[in-house]
Every structure is written in C-alpha cells, then in structure tokens.
Image 1 (cartoon, rainbow, N blue to C red):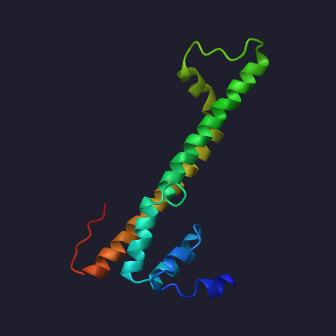
Image 2 (cartoon, rainbow, N blue to C red):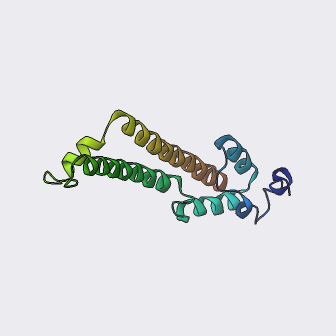
Image 3 (cartoon, rainbow, N blue to C red):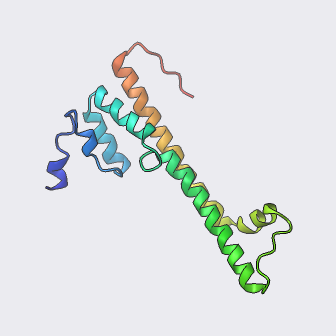
Length: 143
C-alpha cells in the first residue's frame, strides 16, 4: 500500500492510529488541519500520554541526558586508559561535569532541547485550535 493511499482517509475516526510516528512538521500540520476536533483531541492525548516514543519533549530531554552520560563515559574511559589505576573520582562529579561540558556538547544538548520546545509549541497551537473549534468565544491569552 502506498503512503499516499494509506493516509488519504485522514478524517476517519481510526485514521490517527494509522499515522506514522514521525512526520515533517509541515506535512503533519496539513494532515491535522483536515481532521475534526475529536480526531485532533485523540492525537493530542496520544502525544501527551504516549511516553518518550511519541512525546517530543520527553524524547528531547531523554536524548539530552543520554548525550551527557555518553560524554561522561568517554572521559572516564580516556582517563582509565591514561592512568593504570583507572579513573580516580576524588573530586566528585563536579570535576567530571567540568571536563565533560564543551561547546560541541552544549550545542548538541541545546539542539535537542530546542526540538522539545518546538514540540511543546506545536502541541500548544493544536490544543488552542481544538478549544477554538469547540467554543469560538473562548479568549486564549498568549503566554
């Protein structure tokens, strides 16, 4: 089944479950605009309750933590290889954090966290659109 025909029935009740987990933002927004408020509400609940596999904010924060831990393991392994006695952690984790954080790592973490913020912003606009469709008289105050 081609992707075009598989997702052509986006307005049906069970079409949200057929969506692949990762769509480019523009394509996802176009598909969601074709849905009614009930389908969008289901999609919102899946995003919020789906865990890190679907929730972009959870995924971004988990990826940022994973990047930091990988870098800490790299530093420990390099120190253990350089010193025959292994990695000496007398100064605690603060020394390890100072060694681990560099501009490249900070840039990676910032990019991951920015993806989480984009997810939150998209989710907020989706929730606003559902609320506005339910009751157009609702005043939505921008943050």
